[in-house]
Figure (tube, rainbow, N blue to C red):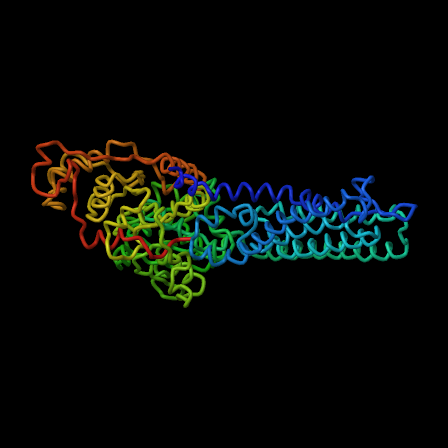
Length: 611
């Protein structure tokens, strides 16, 4: 009866038990090793250290302790074996997107960076070996073993910096160093210790710690001076917010992933307009001009281009499909094309003469010029664009989506955006970046973009597997048959639907239902009207693409909470008069015909999945 619920909760149970075993591993190993911790007495006998009344190898109770210890040792041995197997399988399971595996062993991997996943086993083995040190009968040997063990693991930790939180790496290294120093000092107080041996060992360890500290210090200083020679921002992306706010942000995210260097966009980094041109002049290594239809007509974009031109900042042009080259008469009459007066840009020393020279320079083909790749998938498109910005051309690595892998899952959340709207698809990708990890780790749900999907045999089966639909509402939504069909079919099949409103979207009026909808859906006007009107009754969550990253994080959290609560759960039931019109209505529910384009977009199984 409850088998399905138990199976669903199994990853959480495994993760909880694993976390508890990691916490109490040292105590468990010490209990198992108690029968082996014998100390000699003046009468020549050896007794168990924790139970002096039990003589090692002679008392009946000692045999019982040994048998109990052997049986209880199955717990830490099984745990370590399970963790070793999980570590070995982690790369393959991560590639396949096995959410149950990753949720089950979150206690192992999610405290460490993905590249240092193996460090979890080092951490566990260190704890187990420290607990076994008291088994060694010689106290001097105990001191040597534990100091060597701590020093070697500290070297590994300092070399790899495995913890996900950067400060945790410094804290771990510092505490280990303090512990090693304390042990060195305390080792002279051990009974029977050889001062010469201990002093030699402590000297070696302390010198090693000093060399490690000096190396880290010199490395930090070298990095500091190298960074001082570099400008603060690797790239500055000039763009028109109304046309390309989401696209500029997505390009920024891709570039930062590839370079690990800051990228400037005004919605995140600009605090005072008075310093905007100074940032371009002195703090930027490269200016990226993201050219959409109106970029060159925007006064502040024009000022940034002029500043970069006269400051000899390298310029990279990125052309979108909507961009049209300025004609000679437009360049000769820039006062009619760019309003430098009304925007107060003139007060910063930007003149029309400077602007004309700069725009003529843009047309001289004397610097890097790129076109946005024309690919169906927005992730692959912008990954390739970022690669082109870095190397001037697409590399072989960009021919395949670097963020995707093949997987099949029934726990899918689809984010749908009008494929004809570049800004909407970019916004959908940004939302995916911001919610995917939490949805995957906490709930085992996968997030996909409809623009990234291919097709399988039955689109109907694919939409039936989706757990929720997130609809990005943009200016192209009401003119996109594919997205309108997704809304309608999702409503009809009672999917959980969350509507997300982008700044360009305007809710439909009566004229849409009376004029535009009949042209889009000539065969399903009444049913489409009911489905869409029911959909628009629910409050949409704003996703303000031109806002700062902090605002977008907050809005993404609101969307995530709406998804978690089950979206809208629309159940569209038309009136009897509507249901009686035409075929396709079964049991009082609306039935929509899936077109070929719909099948292609909604068929999700066995296709690429974003990391």
